[in-house]
Image (cartoon, rainbow, N blue to C red; front, side, top):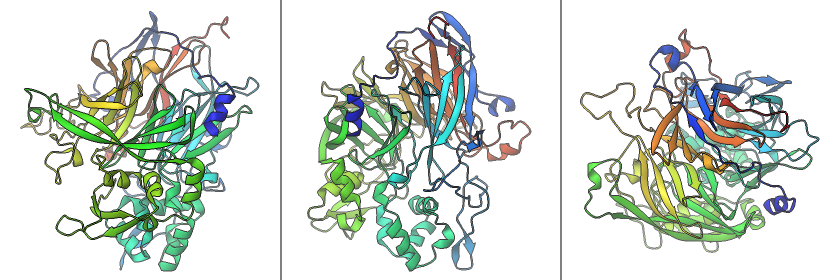
Length: 635
């Protein structure tokens, strides 16, 4: 299959293993308007006793054009222009507007839609000496839907600056398009392993037009996303007006084609190959993390009531068949401690049990997905006074508007439930479906530890939320990075809180009106990256923020040896920081990646019109650098 064929080609990992000494100067909390309008990075990086003057450097910004190709332009299945709906004051498209009888469809504008929400960006070695460049970067554009990925062909200069050669959109039309690509990782076999977040709720498409629109009017983001995505097939909101047009939408749009792990590779000819893996299950995938056996993959579910899943290939390097598991968290209080006294949970650990959901091959799942509907998988009962009838199982699991359900899997549909309704089915089998916003994942092989960011410890994890679940701890809106012990077969065994933000807004008076979480620690941790994966180098964990609890978001470096946190990047008003990464060209250059999407969108929207705004609304794909140098002897 796909991965096995790469192994047979003998493609080595992209980067060599060379130990480096690394130091980054800290970045101060921004105070002035000019600083808050800027992306400010560490000013000096010391690499093997050599000091490099550094800053945040844009590779490309959304809307930039390279030989006529516009970075971030949203395209349909024919690779032609998608048009934008009118924007609201938050720079969010609105396909419906208030009318006499409620919300009514609006006409799209004549403006081509360009996303300013880049996300994870990888660096992949091109194994073709005759190709124009040595490397390809794959840049996610998460939203608006339909989503996009762009390939940037790049080289490094002698002084390790990134030089763009060409740009092209990645074509996912063979898979029905692409849905919300969030974070990703570069595999040991030199591919880009990506994600599709916030999977569409297939249950919405078992109803009629009026019921679907009622869900939209109730604020169900999945209904909104489906309307947005249909532009991929040339449909706009004005085309959805009644039961007949809704039936036509359902005939065209299969929700089970979305919500999967994706993979991008560059073949020997230098061409891009795009793939989706149905074998890894279907949840709100933030990112997958590959373990040291090249066989086990953990998947983060960015949901309100989410799960943690593990996919184990039947054979290493071959994702075309395997088994899927979900974790049950068993909470225990350590001796002589009281977890209620602190939001850092020092007295709590969780033993993990793994529930097998099912085994399947890619080929059988591809066939099973065709024509599959939610009501072919489940029978739904009625919830009465918080209880389900005999034979039905109570489920509260999902993202967005999470509703309580009473479900029964129909006879013979267990495999479909396991791989296409993974979260609901896992909850039915007893897995813990209460994780709040599981984000980045990172494996540290030298210590056999695993890390997962949860952007907030609220919702199903909160000890005050009913019904009480397997995880019951005091809420912490600032979030935590959790640490897991890893067993010899790469099974996660025990979990505990490792780093938590400090919530200060409940002090009287508030300690900092602009920052409800302390600026000396994390707030809403998002993407993670272990720097030691590349070049056996710095024993550091990169932690990026996606927060409204810091006025400006930060990128942190955690030093495992000194236990020190260093702020190495502060981003512009209203943005977030994504795609922390550390790569090498194997010739003396090091790339410390960071992406800054949607300036002025998440907060401080009024500052977009401030005279100090020199960046505009464009999102940035960039890096902290340049770091290293290429000697002529090495070239």
